[in-house]
Structure formats: C-alpha cells, structure tokens
Image (spheres, rainbow, N blue to C red):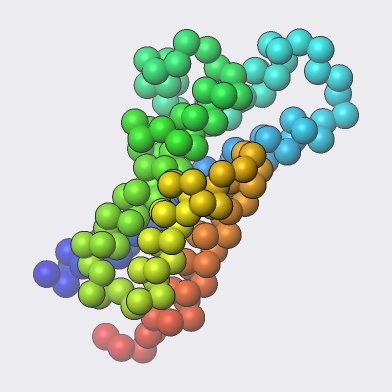
Length: 159
C-alpha cells in the first residue's frame, strides 16, 4: 500500500511539473512572437513558429487527426485546453487533481488546496480567463505554489 501511495505522490508532482513546462513553452513562444522585431507580413511565417512548438512534443500524428492546420489557435487549444492531449495543461492538472484526490488523506491540507484551486481556477474560468500570456502565468504560479507548499510543509526526516 505504501508503494502505491508513493507512486501516486510521485505522479502528482510529475503532472504539476508537466503543466508548468507546457505553460512555459506556450508563453515563451507567445511573447517571442509578440516582441519580435521582424515584420510578419504573412500568416505562414507566424504559423511556422507555432509549428515548431507543436513539433517539440512529438505528437504530430495525433495533432493532425484533430486539427486541419497548424496555427496559433489550434496549437494553443491542443497544448493548453484539449482533454484529448495527455500533455496539455488541462490534462496534466486534471490528472494531478485526480491523483491528489485519491490520496487526499495522505497529503497535507495546503497541498490539496493548491492542486484543487489550480484545477478550479484555471480549468473552469477563474484566473485563466484572459489572454494566453495571463493563462500561462497563472498556471506557472499555481505550479510554483504547489511545489513551494510541498517543500515547506512535508517532513523530510521521517521514514
């Protein structure tokens, strides 16, 4: 039983980390395009920048089954909000919350609240309701809050 709980706790951390990394990837590309000194005259050039982000996840075949083209809208939907993509922010936070719920009595209250709040705020319209940059910042802050709480409140000396 202890190994099952330990594995679940491990995967909570991995899912939260994955959500943070995906948010960082989207945000870097979003701000890179917004701050680029280049004149983007063609939509093709912009879409090629989003194509690079899509290519980083090695899920092109799966992406292509759901979207006809690679553009900002489709890549943000796929990596940020799609429940069909296991590495999307939405899927990662959902998996983290479900795992946390299954071992809720083995987590401290603050850790459960951090995961649950991130899920509720970001996936049901709260903090994530603005533009992509705001959504990614809120996701990263929620993930940092979770890891900060874990670092500060979990006992390290007990076996």
